[in-house]
Length: 450
Ligand SMILES: [Ca+2]
Ligand SMILES: [Ca+2]
Ligand SMILES: [Ca+2]
Image (cartoon, rainbow, N blue to C red; front, side, top):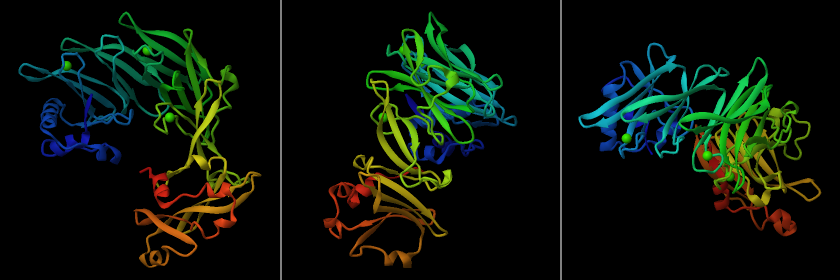
């Protein structure tokens, strides 16, 4: 499937119509160069897009663009999908499907519906005929039911096949038969009831296979995801916000025709296994194809601190065949300043972290935690300081410590500082020495988030 990026559209469209960039900077970076094929696509879209329409980038999945190319009817040529909002009434969303006929691009469909955003747009084969269906979720205000429509293309016509309201959803192959299922989470916030429903296409009809109750007292179901829980077992990861801050993740398996909740056999009792202080949606953090469940860990030495003062560590767990969670990786994320530190594997269980902040400097310092749990020497300090060339000169290599710049952003310098190997380490134990990194390793573990 090829995606045509919104920014390319806008570059071309500037002279044709007022084109408002609704894409995030992230999407702008991903935009490819405008080639001849894209120009043709852009021309076709501009010809059929209703007057005053603005492109609407679907909220999920992250890589979804406002204009996409997918072969919906299976004739070997891509159709063009364009998602838009219609002015002056921005509550009206539109979906334009163009198909290439003998005399050029033709309109195969132009659907409109009420909503503020496209919540989720996917093109996946649900029927088993190897031609993708078009799955479109639309939303209005947060907390209101969203609306899902599955479209299928027959000949040159695009038709709605199925409609259903939902709170959140996922599309993916849950049972491993190479055909996608849809999981809908329904949440009635007045009755405080919730459930997960599994739908499969049977004889050209979307059919509910099974459903299982979920905790209806949560605040919001923030993400539903179908993915691998172990190398051999797929599951449905359901992330929910509980109150002002805290959150929880459920994991459902499809076993013998029913959905089984790995953590809460009784939804009224809730799920304490994956309770977390702050929301952290499930994802494949280490790129091994298995979805991890994230929870915050309070680092040693932060007892008694206020929630916001605690330098929370993000700990990521995988489900195991033994029926429990296993810690896979950790990281420290500073979303406000847009960076994260991936904890080296050999650190896990042997370090703690403290943060400090004053008017000019913000630091995160890592300390050796000895086998008896005592906080010992600092071995790495990461910091953000307002850029000041005179002061930066003073730093650099000293006899006892090395200071390097990791990068600059927004007039601030991001740096790392650590004790020079050989300075006093002869006096220190091996468990401490195993925590030490060289400059290359330090640069590798630091990453920009935005
Ligand atoms: Ca086609
Ligand atoms: Ca399947
Ligand atoms: Ca993973």
